[in-house]
Image (cartoon, rainbow, N blue to C red):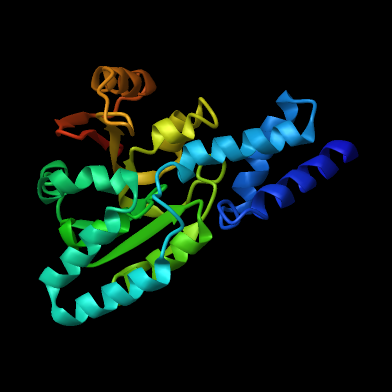
Length: 271
């Protein structure tokens, strides 16, 4: 419908003209905007609803606009001093994103325990990664491993790509809409960390589609143990039931790991 297409173009321009949403993948904004337009009569209402949805999916997790140039300079200086300094810098930057900030207290054990049975990991796809690639120093990666990272933010992925190059990691970082076009690369491990609840705010079927679509031998899937406000609210039981429900018709072996701030499952997709 021409009128709908014109309204959608206007919506996308309006949303992406905002500094807060301008770096988000246009494809993702367009898909969210189309869904919101179909529910509302006014363009103004659809623009507001689209911004709210984008905030729920991504904006709520980043403290403020990423200071990517400053962070990259910080990482370069730390890398020149050696591994301990680089790890300290990575920790400091990860504290600016809610998802990785919650993982900092368990960072020394989280990947070591969940991935012990499949280490060393030869290739990774980090889905809706946020700042998680900065945890590479803690991952049990094989020499020469490849790391692919994707999220909806172009500027964040430029920063992550520069970090991968800085630490000599083969791979790339790119913006994409994982709900509708998940990466097609074959990998040893897919990281789907606290991602499914966010995606399912846009599309209730997104979690299962993503699990089916990622071409990985294993998927490390996790969920938050608390809300962003720090409340429990029975989230561990809720999300464990959600994962079991998603995998009802899949005969994939699953290992469960419970940490103070995160519930994780290592899913064996090889069968």
